[in-house]
Length: 520
Image (cartoon, rainbow, N blue to C red; front, side):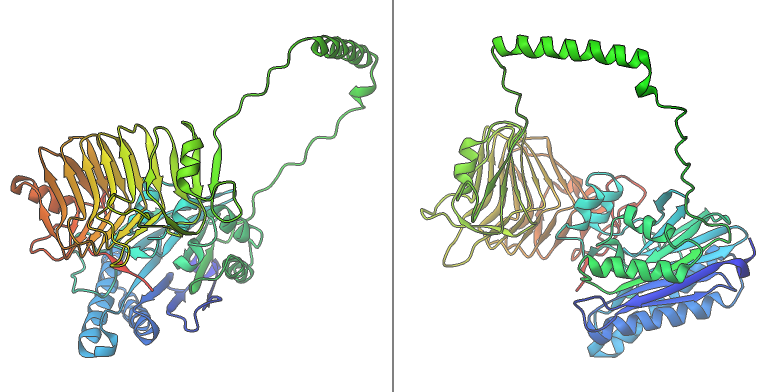
């Protein structure tokens, strides 16, 4: 493909909420260079990081020495190290970094360099495919098909990343730093690079529709994508770079064949209609004399909160049967919640339903005793000196999935006595004792939890407890695990403040990359 025949456009917008724009882009169709950068650090720091990244990437790629893959690696590493040095030399820029996605076209293919959670999509008529992998706990679960695209888009931990450009020094070939791919790029396809201001708000199907409806006019396609993100809330800066091959078009929809004559007016059809009408009348008459069986009812959603049928979670749980879901609307609930076998408890909006201390304190906020196949998701458990909680969640001989919960300032965050607990994507922080305490049981699974600043052990195994640990982030708390398991734990999790912490293999299922950062 001749690069000069490409059609490309780029557009960046601050969005509807933020005043400044920390995103940046660069495109050079003649050299086949396309770049999107999303700054981290807030205000001038994020913008400065993005500015340095564009300058350093451009400078290296314009020197056409070495293979395409080498050039991309060196360009990103140069940007990384320059951002780090600039931050060390200026207190106002401390902590600045960025994420980026870079494409270098070469001989009918695209070499992709990627760090963080900006994205590259490839489009062909009627299809869209995400090429890059999100280096974030939520994006990784989406890539592993543990959660849907919609669940990932509204996840409260969506803004955390495990890799960035600029927070520490790197060499071009450091493992678990730059994701490099080479993909085919033919004349009938298009490439879309974007910051998460687009992908967090606009589903991939709508992205494809916006691009295809403006095929041949990438400037109009870029404007449509920016408009879609702003219409969905515009919560972040939005940047898109759209590159179309010369033959990229919208899919052709075949017209429906016109019917020959009208089969509804034929004599055989009228005869069949008569038989059907007569049969229906017979069944209707017969049905008047037979007892009617009520239609079966399926799983229900029992809503709790202002203006709903139930004012407390406990009242809804009492009425729930296996298969039902109890959904709590935004607000504070001062009660103890007891889980029930086969019933799901969830927050309507992640972390907007808050559990505080019950009027008669002394017990956990959430209790499960001999409960099977239950699930709790998306609530926030909050304690303080006025309303203390000795335990956030206590599971006793139960099989319960605890997902996307936030637990803070309790005594023990999550306490498990036997059974089989599955703890996924939770944030347990600032607790007065252990973050997660496992007492017996051997089938526990802890994946992609954030366990930080707890005064006791972040994770403790006692009384023969055994747990599988993958992708968990632990910081500013200790570990109470067998020394023989420590190396394996370091390889599969992120011990951010422990010497010799490992860097999980990103190719392995459920593994993430080294450093976890929150983004403004």
